Amino acid sequence: MPREPRPAFELERHVFYWITQVIGSRDRRLSQALKGVGVRVPEWRVLASLYARRRCSMSDLADIATIDRTTLTRTVDRMQQAGWVARLSDSDDMRVTRLALTATGERMFARIWPTVERLNRAAVAGLPESAVDTLRRTLERMKSNLDQGLAGDERAA
Image 1 (cartoon, helix red, strand yellow):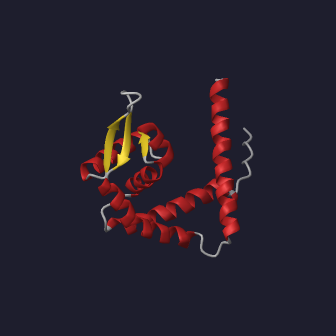
Image 2 (image 1 turned 120 degrees about the vertical axis):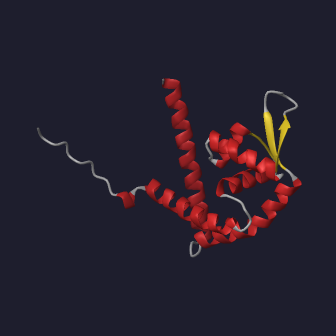
Image 3 (image 1 turned 180 degrees about the vertical axis):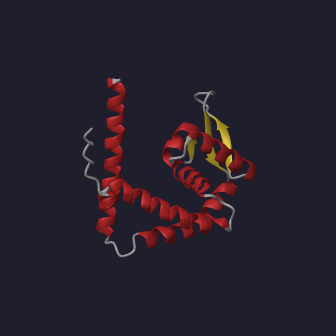
């Protein structure tokens, strides 16, 4: 029986390979840097997301922080016990719970941000500002393409 030809594939030319390599490398370094303050990378993502957005539903937060719902629930529980996050009732819809940083959570964000900012600057060192802006716009477009494509796929199903 003849073998199927192998598809042409070069891992190092695959854009998502490099995206995951960058994220993995940054997360490993971030994990080490945050160990001293007792914060994990998913907790940092929640702190940053809530700091930027002020209040989010669990669903919105899962999307923004790119954390699966099960991990996010456990993460938020730990953060609430630490006093960093508060669960608030939504005045428009009592079925929805909003999450917000407490004053302690805001202080934790402020304490961590300089470390994260140094790591972020190190990651783009040597790149012109225009290249960083182009990369950001490119990634935003890729995300939008995927979101639109997935929405189209769901409508077709």
